[in-house]
Image (cartoon, rainbow, N blue to C red; front, side, top):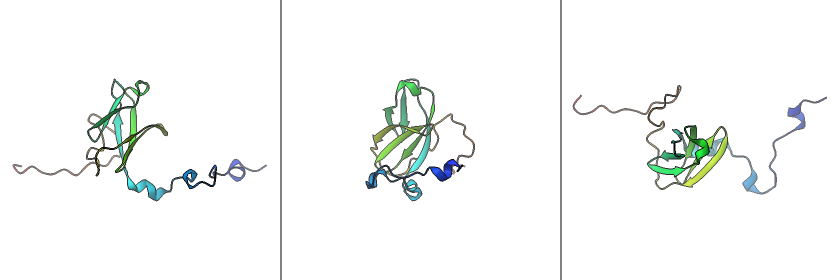
Length: 114
């Protein structure tokens, strides 16, 4: 009569280091951005366009961007990984037209004429 948390544990499938769960500090090496998939199944992240498939037309997806790859996630499922063509932070966290609460606003600069 034990509870499931006592009976089942998350352990690596093998002793191979590639199957060890991701550590939270590794998550700090990249940046999460929010995008909406276009009507043709294409997403644009940091001026790089690629297809994630027609099954995700119009859906909101999360993209994890680091210096070498872009991973696209939909409802906690990895749906696409592509090589990133540029380095550095992504300037636009949210795509235009997305109104998501509790998202940090990028710093804005005043124009010289104002």
